[in-house]
Image (tube, rainbow, N blue to C red):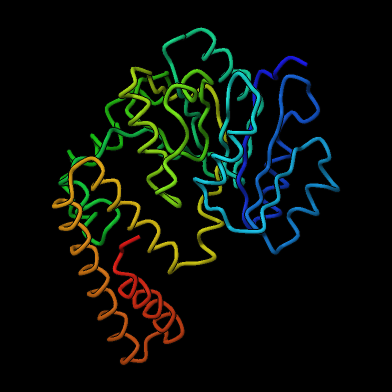
Amino acid sequence: MPPPAISIIIVSWNVRELLRACLASLPLGQPDVEVIVVDSASTDGTPAMVRSDYPAVRLVASADNLGYTRGNNLGLEQARGRCLFILNPDTELRPGALDALQAYMQAHPRVGVIGPQLLWPDGAPQPTCRRFPTLALAFFESTWLQRLTPRGWLDRYYAGDLPADEPAVVDWVVGAALFVRRETYTQVGGLDEGFFMYSEELDWQRRIRAAGWQVVHLPAAQVVHHAARSSAQVPAATHIRFNTSKVRYYRKYHGPLAAEALRWYLLGHFAVQLALETGKWLLGHRRDLRRARAAAYREVLRSGLRG
């Protein structure tokens, strides 16, 4: 049996209804498209829903929470398609997106990864393409100092100078939807499982670019992205995973001294946030919210952001 043209890989954890909508947007049952769902020990009935409602989907039901990176690697290992489409479960393909991705990949042999235009549920575009972050940016972006970041740094990082409605070669694209050439995956390998989740797509595309492949943002292919629905269920773990992955990325590409400086800086950031939340709790302001946030920040500090 010849391999399908496209393998779609979705890693899911406790987002059954979002996954249902995602699967409903896919061309299930077509012989040239296979869909693989890797479920990471969901407790909301996700595996049963996939088995009963989407029998054409190949379900890999894990007894453990594999994490985004390991789960996708498992799906990639089982995929047979000539193109590999990593897709978040909180996404929905707009009509024509898959055809546009496939056509562009076939017409451009040096392109290894394509990122479609991600959209908010109301249709507004999400910032999708990026340039590689500098070490200086690490101390601003996604911290409480982001609002003080020099405007030129953020414009460059978010590729604000590139046309919004034309294909563009970029450093990397957001990992909610990554359309990857099989030859690229064969050459570079899968995601680095040292990243449980977060920064893994940045690291992967940096390796892909270093191997000589292009990464392209393709606005003609559109995907609705509801964003961060799984991670929102575990705020403390999300803070820890996001920031330990960030430190790991900078250790990998900027060295141990830079990574240690960043780690201590981030810990200081959470210590200040803990003090602020504690102060607001003492003043009686929305005490349930302040208690929950303070507990999350204490857990982050206990972790040491050591991964």
